[in-house]
Amino acid sequence: MFETTERSWRYDHENQDQLVTLEQLRIFLAVAERQHVTRAAEALNLTQSAVSSAITTLEGRHGVALFDRVGRSIVLNRAGEVFLAEARKVLAQAQAAEAALADLSGLERGRLSIHASQTIASYWLPPRLTLFHAAHPGIEIDVAIGNTAQVARAVAEGDAEIGLVEGEVDDPVLSRSVIDEEQLSLVVAPLHPWASAHTSADHDLTKTAWVLREPGSGTRAAFEHMLAARHLSLSDLKIAMVLPGNEAVRSAVEAGAGAGVMSQTVARLGVARKALVEIAFDLPPRQFYLLRHKQRYRSRAGDAFLEMAKP
Image 1: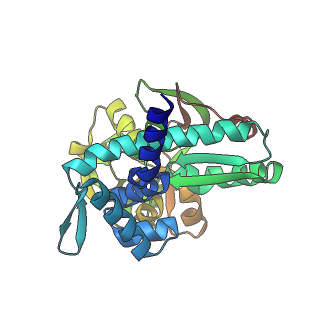
Image 2 (image 1 turned 30 degrees about the vertical axis):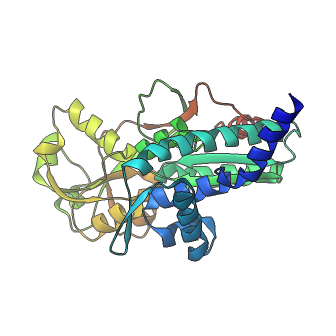
């Protein structure tokens, strides 16, 4: 019996280089999400050669190609897609284990991962993070920005413990609660026909060009809900541009590309510079939602941050 155990140990010891490490999984995930070695290396603060070597070693060690090399591009293939799902699960479990250990030290050290949509991450979140860091300087805070759909996916897959979004989310594995709200603004450039009167009517919505956020954005979802309440849809409007960011939309509206609906906080700078005119229009407040996984481990750091973030 001892001999068998010894042989088993020796076999595992001699073949431990066959095991996949967490670092290799992190590197693989970064490359898979960006489909680009250089960008993954920049995000991980590693050299491009180190990232390339890790991927080559991972593929060579197990005899499986995870990416297709097309010219200078690298594209996740079917085997890579299957492995990606498992890699995310393992990294999420490792993160939960790390959080559980950190909780044993109270709030002296640890890590808190937050994913937030653009408006929240750019305007609502920073002052609250500053207060939390001042109270708990030993907690490392990791923040990533995406639209509502991307944030919800990150929480569902365990990439983030806390998600903060502006749009509604319907995912059975996530809990959702209102954490705050803000006012939306309808804005145009000073030379827009609506600017002189500072008012608009429902029928005017179909007679001007619009600049919108991308699908999946909470701002766009709120705008679509507003249209539906007036028995309209995006197909009834003249869509001039669809842009992937608050500042891009604000700049396009300032340049005269069309009307736009955006966070009042985002619009405020343009209005103050007289580059935008806010139009009196009945827009309901938009709620900010907190997303957490119903079953994954919830750290004391996460609970402490949310307690401090309450309005």
